[in-house]
Image 1: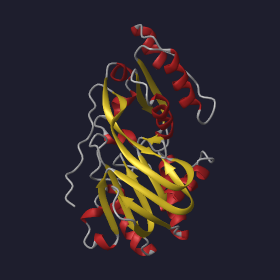
Image 2 (image 1 turned 45 degrees about the vertical axis):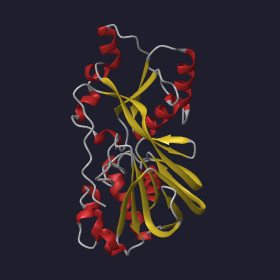
Image 3 (image 1 turned 135 degrees about the vertical axis):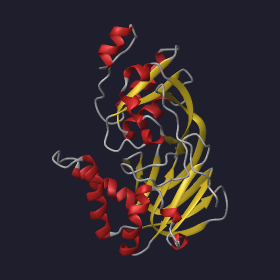
Image 4 (image 1 turned 180 degrees about the vertical axis):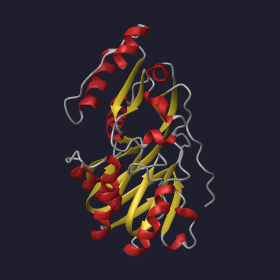
Length: 291
């Protein structure tokens, strides 16, 4: 479809097949270094592929990044209206470049979320399940959640929010979002917006399996903050920076891909992502937040 449209419209294009992890980022950086004109890179994949594209284009004012969401979770595009237009080549090529936020962490960037604890362990399980093509993508996330519910992995941390005093937390999970969604459609950040200039952080306390299971449905649809007594289960904050010390190396899901680190230095970078927004799409405005 890309070839048919571009050749029919006389659009200068190249289709590049990545050779492995990190290759998309390297390719974009090499291409930007050699070309001074306006460039657009469309990541054909999921949030992990978009992450590579964003990191490759970072720092090049002539480079913009888009996505054709053919991956597993595709959570970033859930933040926009008319998502079907991301598969419309005319809407993609005819769209505008919008300035969206990026999460800067440990001198790299994320577009969607950083997760540790339960969420990251679910991603580990999903990556194993994906080796078996008979399992549908959406089912993989629910299977992963059920598997991890049995073991109920937690995460301990020392965290400073916006440079404030250090807090000790014992959690089931922490989700740091630019996007309102993670994990293949979990509405973890109901007040998050990809252009609001803030991080949305959800701390879920290390509650019992039964309590967390009762929370799961509302965590999925984004209504969990409306539950009675939610302050005993979850803490939700909007901020601009976080400094986290896990005390030991931890698995961290970054846009659905796993990394290991014992510390996180996280900042929001307003407008740092030059994003190719398809014609007819707009970012969904976040719900008002009343702390």
